[in-house]
Image (cartoon, rainbow over all chains, first blue to last red):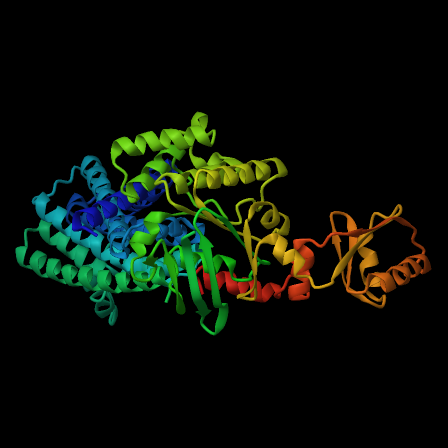
Length: 251
Length: 333
């Protein structure tokens, strides 16, 4: 099959997935309300008597934006499990489309959803708290890398889960510890031992750290974190693709 | 006539479970071929392998000269698959669903638009084309599923239980559609667990049981293969529960099999003259009065029972085994 045709197949699969997700308006609203809610809840720093704009500016919003990228991409990739259980996945398998195109398409939709969700939070945060990002292209790069690495994790979960409920449990098992240990609400340095070591294994830690480093203009941290995220992206994508490929050929 | 589908020694293991066991058959070009068997017999697994959606453990499938395992894309382009359940994108409209399928099958924009209009018109879905398909009735779902399978104008249509779960009227409409599609020159491979459907629709039938193909011929030839087996139809007067007579009549000497068919008790025997008086006496002894008794022509169901030793309506495998097979087939376990 020609590479361009394969790529177009992926684009159409991704487009169709996103179309399906955005058709369910309630689904989109609920998934975005959660991080917005968290943003408001944690905007009052523990012990503080008034809003700490510096904290919101350099800590909270970058953390929440990273977390939203995680929720957006993993949620969207979960559509693979729904597709499998509803038989929709079979419809694509029965079409003259290569397995690689299917995996790339599913990955694209996950990553795009991650980027869109994170951007919405970025806009909401910037508008409500007057937060401005000093280097928007660096922010976009980190959000992009984050969304792809979380999509990789999503494909692994989707490949391993036998049905949607199991997928939800598996993803919560990863997402919630990651949310609290990935430095979204509490700084990793302030965590008791050995939690900082655990945090260093989680990709979200590097996302939040990089987004904060952009705010305080620490380019070396941003570079290192971006490299770690790139390794995560390649690793999770390869593993996720391998698992999905096994499902598609049903060996 | 050239073979449209050639299945050779097709075998599928799900772990240690043998779902399809060295199945051989061919479907001739432009014929309607029915794969008949009870639930869990291996019909769906067989057609999934034919459509290139499931890799066989061993054996080959050749579609229009292309080996499925070597040229899956060529095969998929020539096949239209109609699953037993509607598996379209529920949130999206019929038109958007068809657009997506048309793109995946490589139809250009103009052809796509023309064909979508054509199939929507043909299957009376034009009025509801922009509604999300999750709001469609079961019959509409089935029509749309066929429409989606026809969009790329395949030579071969593979239909899994095409009338299953439909009301009588929609099922009749579906059978008419199948016959029309065949008249247009399409080869049709369908699976069914309904004997009457295979008898009415298929020009040739393959009977599959526990993963093995146990008969392959025209419905007439299969019926004639009952080797001296004759059928007797009995109706007991004023008895709503005809079922209760089955174990009673089974006791009679010379009776090979008893089951209910279309509200009548159907008794199979190789020795009808000896069996008739025994059955009449038994019914009388148990307080029943025979309203109607007649010797009947052997049907495909009689042949099925003769071949498998059981009615297709009986569960040939335990519920547990059936669920295990379904889970294994869906790749979930």
